[in-house]
Image (cartoon, rainbow over the protein chains, first blue to last red):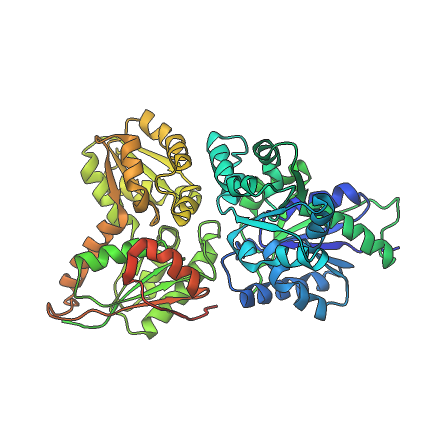
Length: 266
Length: 266
Protein backbone atom coordinates (compact mmCIF):
# COMPACT_ATOMS: atom_id res chain seq x y z
CA UNK A 1 0.00 0.00 0.00
CA UNK A 2 1.32 3.37 -0.97
CA UNK A 3 -0.24 6.81 -0.54
CA UNK A 4 2.20 8.65 -2.81
CA UNK A 5 0.54 10.39 -5.74
CA UNK A 6 0.50 9.25 -9.35
CA UNK A 7 2.25 11.77 -11.60
CA UNK A 8 0.37 12.62 -14.81
CA UNK A 9 1.77 14.91 -17.46
CA UNK A 10 0.79 16.42 -20.78
CA UNK A 11 1.96 19.23 -23.02
CA UNK A 12 -1.07 21.19 -21.80
CA UNK A 13 -4.74 20.71 -21.07
CA UNK A 14 -5.74 17.62 -23.07
CA UNK A 15 -4.24 15.15 -20.59
CA UNK A 16 -7.02 16.11 -18.19
CA UNK A 17 -9.26 13.60 -20.01
CA UNK A 18 -6.74 10.92 -18.98
CA UNK A 19 -6.66 12.32 -15.43
CA UNK A 20 -10.47 12.13 -15.33
CA UNK A 21 -10.39 8.50 -16.45
CA UNK A 22 -7.88 7.78 -13.65
CA UNK A 23 -10.06 9.53 -11.02
CA UNK A 24 -13.04 7.47 -12.19
CA UNK A 25 -11.26 4.13 -12.15
CA UNK A 26 -9.01 4.73 -9.11
CA UNK A 27 -11.03 6.94 -6.77
CA UNK A 28 -8.61 6.54 -3.85
CA UNK A 29 -5.45 7.52 -5.66
CA UNK A 30 -3.95 10.98 -5.29
CA UNK A 31 -2.46 12.65 -8.35
CA UNK A 32 -0.16 15.47 -9.42
CA UNK A 33 -0.99 16.75 -12.90
CA UNK A 34 1.70 18.71 -14.76
CA UNK A 35 0.63 20.63 -17.90
CA UNK A 36 3.54 22.13 -19.85
CA UNK A 37 1.42 25.08 -20.95
CA UNK A 38 4.48 27.27 -21.54
CA UNK A 39 5.64 24.96 -24.32
CA UNK A 40 2.35 23.55 -25.64
CA UNK A 41 1.82 22.08 -28.23
CA UNK A 42 4.42 19.31 -28.54
CA UNK A 43 2.96 18.08 -31.86
CA UNK A 44 4.96 20.33 -34.20
CA UNK A 45 8.22 19.95 -32.22
CA UNK A 46 11.05 17.58 -33.11
CA UNK A 47 11.35 14.21 -31.34
CA UNK A 48 14.58 15.37 -29.62
CA UNK A 49 12.89 18.48 -28.23
CA UNK A 50 9.88 16.47 -27.02
CA UNK A 51 12.22 14.01 -25.30
CA UNK A 52 14.13 16.81 -23.59
CA UNK A 53 10.94 18.49 -22.32
CA UNK A 54 9.48 15.15 -21.17
CA UNK A 55 12.67 14.32 -19.27
CA UNK A 56 12.52 17.68 -17.46
CA UNK A 57 8.94 16.97 -16.39
CA UNK A 58 9.82 13.42 -15.28
CA UNK A 59 12.59 14.82 -13.08
CA UNK A 60 10.20 17.35 -11.58
CA UNK A 61 7.55 14.69 -10.86
CA UNK A 62 10.15 12.35 -9.31
CA UNK A 63 11.24 15.17 -7.01
CA UNK A 64 7.58 15.34 -5.94
CA UNK A 65 7.91 11.64 -4.96
CA UNK A 66 5.32 10.17 -7.33
CA UNK A 67 4.97 6.37 -7.30
CA UNK A 68 4.21 6.07 -11.02
CA UNK A 69 4.19 8.37 -14.04
CA UNK A 70 1.48 8.52 -16.71
CA UNK A 71 2.42 10.21 -19.98
CA UNK A 72 -1.03 11.61 -20.80
CA UNK A 73 0.15 12.96 -24.14
CA UNK A 74 0.30 11.05 -27.39
CA UNK A 75 3.22 13.02 -28.83
CA UNK A 76 5.32 12.59 -25.72
CA UNK A 77 4.44 8.89 -25.52
CA UNK A 78 5.44 8.44 -29.17
CA UNK A 79 8.82 10.11 -28.77
CA UNK A 80 9.80 9.80 -25.10
CA UNK A 81 8.24 6.70 -23.49
CA UNK A 82 11.25 4.44 -24.04
CA UNK A 83 13.73 7.13 -22.96
CA UNK A 84 11.80 7.86 -19.74
CA UNK A 85 11.46 4.15 -18.92
CA UNK A 86 15.23 3.76 -19.19
CA UNK A 87 15.91 6.36 -16.50
CA UNK A 88 12.83 6.25 -14.25
CA UNK A 89 12.95 4.36 -10.92
CA UNK A 90 9.10 4.19 -10.95
CA UNK A 91 6.80 2.68 -13.61
CA UNK A 92 6.10 4.88 -16.64
CA UNK A 93 2.85 4.30 -18.57
CA UNK A 94 2.04 5.86 -21.94
CA UNK A 95 -1.29 6.24 -23.75
CA UNK A 96 -0.45 4.53 -27.04
CA UNK A 97 0.08 0.91 -26.02
CA UNK A 98 -3.22 0.71 -24.05
CA UNK A 99 -5.15 2.30 -26.94
CA UNK A 100 -3.57 -0.07 -29.45
CA UNK A 101 -4.33 -3.10 -27.29
CA UNK A 102 -8.00 -2.15 -26.93
CA UNK A 103 -8.30 -1.40 -30.65
CA UNK A 104 -6.95 -4.82 -31.66
CA UNK A 105 -9.44 -6.49 -29.32
CA UNK A 106 -12.38 -4.34 -30.47
CA UNK A 107 -11.71 -4.62 -34.22
CA UNK A 108 -11.56 -8.43 -34.05
CA UNK A 109 -9.69 -8.64 -37.34
CA UNK A 110 -11.42 -5.68 -39.00
CA UNK A 111 -9.68 -2.49 -40.15
CA UNK A 112 -8.57 -0.15 -37.36
CA UNK A 113 -8.79 3.60 -37.81
CA UNK A 114 -6.45 5.95 -35.92
CA UNK A 115 -6.94 9.70 -35.60
CA UNK A 116 -4.57 12.16 -33.94
CA UNK A 117 -2.63 15.37 -34.36
CA UNK A 118 -0.32 15.72 -37.36
CA UNK A 119 2.65 14.86 -35.14
CA UNK A 120 1.14 11.69 -33.67
CA UNK A 121 0.06 10.39 -37.07
CA UNK A 122 3.43 11.21 -38.66
CA UNK A 123 5.17 9.33 -35.84
CA UNK A 124 3.28 6.17 -36.92
CA UNK A 125 3.37 5.12 -33.25
CA UNK A 126 -0.17 3.71 -33.09
CA UNK A 127 0.21 1.75 -36.32
CA UNK A 128 3.46 0.27 -34.97
CA UNK A 129 1.92 -0.62 -31.60
CA UNK A 130 -1.11 -2.20 -33.31
CA UNK A 131 1.08 -4.26 -35.67
CA UNK A 132 3.22 -5.43 -32.75
CA UNK A 133 0.11 -7.17 -31.42
CA UNK A 134 -1.56 -8.05 -34.70
CA UNK A 135 1.03 -8.15 -37.50
CA UNK A 136 -1.60 -8.44 -40.25
CA UNK A 137 -3.86 -5.66 -38.97
CA UNK A 138 -5.10 -3.17 -41.54
CA UNK A 139 -4.63 0.34 -40.15
CA UNK A 140 -6.05 3.54 -41.68
CA UNK A 141 -4.63 6.75 -40.21
CA UNK A 142 -5.93 10.32 -40.42
CA UNK A 143 -4.47 13.51 -38.97
CA UNK A 144 -7.16 15.91 -37.65
CA UNK A 145 -5.37 19.20 -36.84
CA UNK A 146 -8.59 21.19 -36.45
CA UNK A 147 -10.06 19.02 -33.70
CA UNK A 148 -7.93 20.41 -30.84
CA UNK A 149 -8.87 24.06 -31.45
CA UNK A 150 -12.52 23.04 -31.96
CA UNK A 151 -12.50 21.36 -28.55
CA UNK A 152 -10.75 24.30 -26.93
CA UNK A 153 -13.44 26.61 -28.40
CA UNK A 154 -16.09 24.29 -26.91
CA UNK A 155 -17.72 23.82 -30.34
CA UNK A 156 -18.58 20.16 -29.82
CA UNK A 157 -21.90 20.38 -31.69
CA UNK A 158 -21.32 23.34 -34.00
CA UNK A 159 -22.27 22.82 -37.68
CA UNK A 160 -18.64 23.61 -38.58
CA UNK A 161 -17.53 20.81 -36.27
CA UNK A 162 -19.86 18.47 -38.17
CA UNK A 163 -18.43 19.50 -41.54
CA UNK A 164 -14.88 19.14 -40.31
CA UNK A 165 -15.61 15.76 -38.76
CA UNK A 166 -17.32 14.61 -41.97
CA UNK A 167 -14.25 15.61 -44.00
CA UNK A 168 -11.78 13.90 -41.67
CA UNK A 169 -13.92 10.77 -41.25
CA UNK A 170 -14.63 10.26 -44.98
CA UNK A 171 -11.50 8.21 -45.79
CA UNK A 172 -12.00 6.14 -42.61
CA UNK A 173 -15.62 5.41 -43.53
CA UNK A 174 -14.53 4.51 -47.05
CA UNK A 175 -11.98 2.09 -45.58
CA UNK A 176 -14.77 0.38 -43.63
CA UNK A 177 -13.11 0.61 -40.23
CA UNK A 178 -14.46 -1.50 -37.34
CA UNK A 179 -12.80 0.48 -34.53
CA UNK A 180 -11.39 3.98 -34.23
CA UNK A 181 -8.64 4.95 -31.81
CA UNK A 182 -9.08 8.49 -30.46
CA UNK A 183 -5.33 9.09 -30.53
CA UNK A 184 -5.35 12.56 -28.98
CA UNK A 185 -6.38 13.38 -25.45
CA UNK A 186 -8.71 16.18 -26.61
CA UNK A 187 -10.82 13.91 -28.79
CA UNK A 188 -13.01 12.20 -26.15
CA UNK A 189 -14.96 15.48 -25.99
CA UNK A 190 -15.89 14.99 -29.67
CA UNK A 191 -16.98 11.41 -29.07
CA UNK A 192 -20.76 11.90 -29.60
CA UNK A 193 -20.14 13.78 -32.86
CA UNK A 194 -17.71 11.15 -34.17
CA UNK A 195 -19.99 8.27 -33.20
CA UNK A 196 -22.83 9.94 -35.09
CA UNK A 197 -20.61 10.52 -38.12
CA UNK A 198 -19.33 6.93 -38.22
CA UNK A 199 -22.49 5.16 -37.13
CA UNK A 200 -23.05 2.72 -34.27
CA UNK A 201 -21.10 -0.08 -36.00
CA UNK A 202 -17.73 1.51 -35.28
CA UNK A 203 -16.28 1.08 -31.77
CA UNK A 204 -14.56 4.24 -30.50
CA UNK A 205 -11.50 3.61 -28.34
CA UNK A 206 -10.62 6.27 -25.76
CA UNK A 207 -6.88 5.85 -25.16
CA UNK A 208 -7.19 7.70 -21.84
CA UNK A 209 -9.77 5.29 -20.42
CA UNK A 210 -7.68 2.31 -21.56
CA UNK A 211 -4.62 3.88 -19.98
CA UNK A 212 -6.41 4.22 -16.60
CA UNK A 213 -7.10 0.50 -16.86
CA UNK A 214 -3.39 -0.25 -17.36
CA UNK A 215 -2.47 2.07 -14.47
CA UNK A 216 -4.74 0.03 -12.24
CA UNK A 217 -3.06 -3.20 -13.37
CA UNK A 218 0.44 -1.81 -12.82
CA UNK A 219 -0.30 -0.43 -9.34
CA UNK A 220 -1.81 -3.73 -8.27
CA UNK A 221 1.05 -5.80 -9.74
CA UNK A 222 3.73 -3.61 -8.15
CA UNK A 223 1.94 -3.34 -4.79
CA UNK A 224 1.67 0.43 -5.20
CA UNK A 225 -2.09 0.94 -4.81
CA UNK A 226 -3.45 3.29 -2.14
CA UNK A 227 -5.58 1.97 0.72
CA UNK A 228 -9.25 1.54 -0.16
CA UNK A 229 -10.17 4.18 2.45
CA UNK A 230 -7.59 6.79 1.38
CA UNK A 231 -8.92 10.28 0.66
CA UNK A 232 -7.37 11.42 -2.60
CA UNK A 233 -5.75 14.80 -3.22
CA UNK A 234 -5.40 16.22 -6.71
CA UNK A 235 -2.81 18.89 -7.50
CA UNK A 236 -2.57 20.80 -10.77
CA UNK A 237 0.69 22.40 -11.83
CA UNK A 238 1.35 24.24 -15.09
CA UNK A 239 4.44 25.89 -16.54
CA UNK A 240 2.54 29.05 -17.59
CA UNK A 241 -0.84 30.85 -17.61
CA UNK A 242 -2.80 29.11 -14.87
CA UNK A 243 -5.87 31.26 -15.60
CA UNK A 244 -6.34 29.93 -19.14
CA UNK A 245 -5.65 26.39 -17.91
CA UNK A 246 -8.45 26.73 -15.41
CA UNK A 247 -10.88 28.29 -17.89
CA UNK A 248 -10.43 25.71 -20.65
CA UNK A 249 -9.59 22.83 -18.31
CA UNK A 250 -12.92 23.08 -16.52
CA UNK A 251 -14.52 21.95 -19.82
CA UNK A 252 -12.51 18.77 -19.42
CA UNK A 253 -12.97 17.86 -15.77
CA UNK A 254 -15.48 20.35 -14.39
CA UNK A 255 -15.28 21.60 -10.83
CA UNK A 256 -12.64 19.04 -9.88
CA UNK A 257 -10.12 21.45 -11.38
CA UNK A 258 -8.95 23.40 -8.35
CA UNK A 259 -6.40 26.20 -8.32
CA UNK A 260 -3.32 25.52 -10.45
CA UNK A 261 0.21 26.30 -9.28
CA UNK A 262 2.82 27.63 -11.71
CA UNK A 263 6.25 26.00 -11.96
CA UNK A 264 8.32 27.26 -14.93
CA UNK A 265 10.57 24.56 -16.38
CA UNK A 266 13.52 24.71 -18.75
CA UNK B 1 23.05 53.32 -47.65
CA UNK B 2 23.31 50.07 -45.79
CA UNK B 3 23.35 46.51 -47.08
CA UNK B 4 22.81 44.83 -43.72
CA UNK B 5 19.69 42.67 -43.56
CA UNK B 6 16.41 43.52 -41.88
CA UNK B 7 15.63 41.07 -39.06
CA UNK B 8 12.07 39.74 -39.03
CA UNK B 9 10.75 37.45 -36.34
CA UNK B 10 7.61 35.59 -35.40
CA UNK B 11 6.61 32.79 -33.07
CA UNK B 12 6.41 30.57 -36.14
CA UNK B 13 5.21 30.63 -39.72
CA UNK B 14 2.60 33.42 -39.81
CA UNK B 15 5.16 36.23 -39.94
CA UNK B 16 5.99 35.10 -43.46
CA UNK B 17 3.00 37.17 -44.66
CA UNK B 18 4.78 40.20 -43.20
CA UNK B 19 8.05 39.10 -44.81
CA UNK B 20 6.27 38.81 -48.16
CA UNK B 21 4.87 42.32 -47.79
CA UNK B 22 8.42 43.57 -47.08
CA UNK B 23 9.85 41.77 -50.15
CA UNK B 24 7.13 43.32 -52.28
CA UNK B 25 7.59 46.86 -51.03
CA UNK B 26 11.38 46.81 -50.54
CA UNK B 27 12.71 44.53 -53.29
CA UNK B 28 16.38 45.47 -52.71
CA UNK B 29 16.48 44.75 -48.99
CA UNK B 30 17.98 41.55 -47.62
CA UNK B 31 16.26 39.86 -44.68
CA UNK B 32 16.83 37.27 -41.96
CA UNK B 33 13.59 35.63 -40.84
CA UNK B 34 13.54 33.90 -37.46
CA UNK B 35 10.55 31.64 -36.68
CA UNK B 36 10.48 30.38 -33.09
CA UNK B 37 8.89 27.09 -34.15
CA UNK B 38 10.16 25.26 -31.04
CA UNK B 39 8.02 27.50 -28.84
CA UNK B 40 5.08 28.38 -31.12
CA UNK B 41 2.41 29.57 -30.38
CA UNK B 42 3.05 32.61 -28.19
CA UNK B 43 -0.69 33.40 -27.86
CA UNK B 44 -1.45 31.24 -24.81
CA UNK B 45 1.80 32.19 -23.02
CA UNK B 46 2.10 34.83 -20.32
CA UNK B 47 3.35 38.34 -21.18
CA UNK B 48 6.55 37.72 -19.16
CA UNK B 49 7.33 34.53 -21.08
CA UNK B 50 6.65 36.22 -24.44
CA UNK B 51 8.96 39.10 -23.46
CA UNK B 52 11.73 36.69 -22.45
CA UNK B 53 11.49 34.72 -25.71
CA UNK B 54 11.34 37.91 -27.79
CA UNK B 55 14.41 39.29 -26.05
CA UNK B 56 16.35 36.09 -26.83
CA UNK B 57 15.44 36.42 -30.51
CA UNK B 58 16.36 40.12 -30.55
CA UNK B 59 19.79 39.26 -29.16
CA UNK B 60 20.26 36.56 -31.79
CA UNK B 61 19.24 38.91 -34.63
CA UNK B 62 21.52 41.68 -33.34
CA UNK B 63 24.42 39.19 -33.33
CA UNK B 64 23.58 38.64 -37.02
CA UNK B 65 24.10 42.41 -37.49
CA UNK B 66 20.63 43.37 -38.65
CA UNK B 67 19.99 47.08 -39.24
CA UNK B 68 16.37 47.01 -38.07
CA UNK B 69 14.04 44.50 -36.43
CA UNK B 70 10.44 43.81 -37.43
CA UNK B 71 8.28 42.00 -34.86
CA UNK B 72 6.07 40.12 -37.32
CA UNK B 73 3.95 38.68 -34.53
CA UNK B 74 0.97 40.34 -32.92
CA UNK B 75 1.39 38.66 -29.53
CA UNK B 76 5.04 39.59 -29.31
CA UNK B 77 4.32 43.16 -30.44
CA UNK B 78 1.60 43.46 -27.79
CA UNK B 79 3.80 42.26 -24.94
CA UNK B 80 7.40 42.96 -25.94
CA UNK B 81 7.65 45.94 -28.32
CA UNK B 82 8.35 48.52 -25.60
CA UNK B 83 10.83 46.26 -23.80
CA UNK B 84 12.76 45.54 -27.02
CA UNK B 85 12.82 49.22 -28.01
CA UNK B 86 14.37 50.08 -24.65
CA UNK B 87 17.37 47.81 -25.21
CA UNK B 88 17.80 47.68 -28.99
CA UNK B 89 20.48 49.82 -30.69
CA UNK B 90 18.57 49.50 -34.01
CA UNK B 91 14.96 50.49 -34.79
CA UNK B 92 12.28 47.99 -33.74
CA UNK B 93 8.97 48.01 -35.61
CA UNK B 94 5.84 46.12 -34.52
CA UNK B 95 2.71 45.18 -36.47
CA UNK B 96 0.05 46.73 -34.23
CA UNK B 97 0.73 50.45 -34.54
CA UNK B 98 0.80 50.37 -38.40
CA UNK B 99 -2.44 48.34 -38.51
CA UNK B 100 -4.15 50.68 -36.06
CA UNK B 101 -3.04 53.77 -38.03
CA UNK B 102 -4.40 52.37 -41.30
CA UNK B 103 -7.65 51.32 -39.64
CA UNK B 104 -8.31 54.79 -38.24
CA UNK B 105 -7.72 56.30 -41.67
CA UNK B 106 -9.88 53.72 -43.48
CA UNK B 107 -12.81 53.80 -41.06
CA UNK B 108 -13.09 57.58 -41.28
CA UNK B 109 -15.05 57.80 -38.03
CA UNK B 110 -16.94 54.51 -38.49
CA UNK B 111 -16.67 51.49 -36.19
CA UNK B 112 -13.41 49.55 -36.43
CA UNK B 113 -13.42 45.77 -36.12
CA UNK B 114 -10.35 43.90 -34.88
CA UNK B 115 -9.84 40.15 -35.17
CA UNK B 116 -6.93 38.15 -33.78
CA UNK B 117 -5.93 35.19 -31.65
CA UNK B 118 -7.35 34.91 -28.12
CA UNK B 119 -4.07 36.31 -26.74
CA UNK B 120 -3.96 39.35 -29.01
CA UNK B 121 -7.60 40.24 -28.35
CA UNK B 122 -7.21 39.75 -24.58
CA UNK B 123 -4.17 42.04 -24.62
CA UNK B 124 -6.43 44.83 -25.94
CA UNK B 125 -3.37 46.16 -27.78
CA UNK B 126 -5.15 47.12 -31.03
CA UNK B 127 -8.00 48.88 -29.22
CA UNK B 128 -5.44 50.85 -27.22
CA UNK B 129 -3.40 51.78 -30.29
CA UNK B 130 -6.55 52.83 -32.17
CA UNK B 131 -7.79 54.99 -29.27
CA UNK B 132 -4.35 56.62 -28.95
CA UNK B 133 -4.96 58.04 -32.43
CA UNK B 134 -8.74 58.46 -32.29
CA UNK B 135 -9.90 58.67 -28.66
CA UNK B 136 -13.60 58.41 -29.59
CA UNK B 137 -13.22 55.47 -31.97
CA UNK B 138 -15.72 52.65 -31.58
CA UNK B 139 -13.84 49.35 -31.60
CA UNK B 140 -15.43 45.90 -31.83
CA UNK B 141 -13.08 43.01 -31.10
CA UNK B 142 -13.42 39.30 -31.85
CA UNK B 143 -11.04 36.44 -31.07
CA UNK B 144 -10.90 33.82 -33.87
CA UNK B 145 -8.91 30.86 -32.50
CA UNK B 146 -9.89 28.50 -35.33
CA UNK B 147 -8.51 30.66 -38.13
CA UNK B 148 -4.83 29.78 -37.62
CA UNK B 149 -5.35 26.00 -37.84
CA UNK B 150 -7.71 26.51 -40.82
CA UNK B 151 -4.97 28.43 -42.64
CA UNK B 152 -2.33 25.85 -41.71
CA UNK B 153 -4.61 23.13 -43.13
CA UNK B 154 -4.93 25.18 -46.32
CA UNK B 155 -8.75 25.18 -46.05
CA UNK B 156 -9.18 28.74 -47.35
CA UNK B 157 -12.40 27.96 -49.25
CA UNK B 158 -13.74 24.92 -47.38
CA UNK B 159 -17.44 25.03 -46.37
CA UNK B 160 -16.34 24.66 -42.74
CA UNK B 161 -14.15 27.75 -43.15
CA UNK B 162 -17.23 29.63 -44.39
CA UNK B 163 -19.31 28.52 -41.38
CA UNK B 164 -16.55 29.43 -38.95
CA UNK B 165 -16.00 32.81 -40.63
CA UNK B 166 -19.77 33.48 -40.57
CA UNK B 167 -19.88 32.73 -36.84
CA UNK B 168 -16.88 34.91 -36.00
CA UNK B 169 -17.98 37.77 -38.30
CA UNK B 170 -21.61 37.90 -37.08
CA UNK B 171 -21.03 40.28 -34.13
CA UNK B 172 -18.81 42.49 -36.31
CA UNK B 173 -21.46 42.68 -39.03
CA UNK B 174 -24.08 43.45 -36.39
CA UNK B 175 -21.89 46.27 -35.11
CA UNK B 176 -21.79 47.76 -38.62
CA UNK B 177 -18.00 48.00 -38.87
CA UNK B 178 -16.44 50.12 -41.63
CA UNK B 179 -12.96 48.60 -41.46
CA UNK B 180 -11.57 45.34 -40.13
CA UNK B 181 -8.00 44.91 -38.90
CA UNK B 182 -6.60 41.44 -39.67
CA UNK B 183 -4.75 41.33 -36.35
CA UNK B 184 -2.97 38.03 -36.90
CA UNK B 185 -0.32 37.34 -39.50
CA UNK B 186 -2.08 34.18 -40.71
CA UNK B 187 -5.29 35.98 -41.62
CA UNK B 188 -4.32 37.60 -44.95
CA UNK B 189 -4.69 34.13 -46.47
CA UNK B 190 -8.40 34.20 -45.48
CA UNK B 191 -8.88 37.64 -46.99
CA UNK B 192 -11.12 36.62 -49.95
CA UNK B 193 -13.39 34.62 -47.64
CA UNK B 194 -13.67 37.42 -45.07
CA UNK B 195 -14.32 40.05 -47.73
CA UNK B 196 -17.12 37.90 -49.12
CA UNK B 197 -18.57 37.39 -45.65
CA UNK B 198 -18.50 41.10 -44.75
CA UNK B 199 -19.34 42.53 -48.18
CA UNK B 200 -17.45 45.07 -50.27
CA UNK B 201 -18.34 47.98 -47.94
CA UNK B 202 -15.87 46.89 -45.26
CA UNK B 203 -12.20 47.76 -45.80
CA UNK B 204 -9.85 44.96 -44.72
CA UNK B 205 -6.57 46.13 -43.20
CA UNK B 206 -3.58 43.81 -43.53
CA UNK B 207 -1.29 44.76 -40.64
CA UNK B 208 1.67 43.14 -42.41
CA UNK B 209 1.33 45.28 -45.52
CA UNK B 210 0.97 48.40 -43.36
CA UNK B 211 4.06 47.37 -41.40
CA UNK B 212 6.11 47.06 -44.59
CA UNK B 213 5.09 50.64 -45.35
CA UNK B 214 6.37 51.80 -41.95
CA UNK B 215 9.62 49.84 -42.40
CA UNK B 216 10.18 51.75 -45.65
CA UNK B 217 9.60 55.09 -43.86
CA UNK B 218 11.96 54.19 -41.01
CA UNK B 219 14.79 52.99 -43.28
CA UNK B 220 14.55 56.15 -45.36
CA UNK B 221 14.40 58.45 -42.33
CA UNK B 222 17.37 56.76 -40.63
CA UNK B 223 19.45 56.51 -43.82
CA UNK B 224 19.44 52.72 -43.58
CA UNK B 225 17.99 51.75 -46.97
CA UNK B 226 19.94 49.45 -49.31
CA UNK B 227 21.20 50.71 -52.68
CA UNK B 228 18.60 50.58 -55.45
CA UNK B 229 20.76 48.07 -57.36
CA UNK B 230 21.40 45.74 -54.39
CA UNK B 231 20.60 42.06 -54.92
CA UNK B 232 18.68 40.88 -51.88
CA UNK B 233 19.36 37.71 -49.94
CA UNK B 234 16.71 36.08 -47.77
CA UNK B 235 17.64 33.70 -44.96
CA UNK B 236 15.18 31.59 -42.97
CA UNK B 237 16.06 30.35 -39.51
CA UNK B 238 13.81 28.35 -37.18
CA UNK B 239 14.27 27.00 -33.67
CA UNK B 240 12.84 23.55 -34.55
CA UNK B 241 11.39 21.35 -37.32
CA UNK B 242 12.59 23.03 -40.51
CA UNK B 243 10.73 20.46 -42.65
CA UNK B 244 7.28 21.46 -41.40
CA UNK B 245 8.22 25.15 -41.65
CA UNK B 246 9.06 24.64 -45.32
CA UNK B 247 5.93 22.60 -46.05
CA UNK B 248 3.45 25.00 -44.48
CA UNK B 249 5.51 28.13 -45.13
CA UNK B 250 5.45 27.59 -48.87
CA UNK B 251 1.68 28.26 -48.69
CA UNK B 252 2.59 31.69 -47.38
CA UNK B 253 5.41 32.81 -49.69
CA UNK B 254 5.71 30.09 -52.34
CA UNK B 255 9.04 29.18 -53.85
CA UNK B 256 10.82 32.12 -52.25
CA UNK B 257 11.06 29.94 -49.13
CA UNK B 258 14.49 28.40 -49.50
CA UNK B 259 16.12 25.95 -47.11
CA UNK B 260 15.68 26.85 -43.43
CA UNK B 261 18.53 26.62 -40.91
CA UNK B 262 17.87 25.44 -37.35
CA UNK B 263 19.13 27.48 -34.38
CA UNK B 264 17.75 26.28 -31.01
CA UNK B 265 17.24 29.12 -28.54
CA UNK B 266 16.64 29.16 -24.81
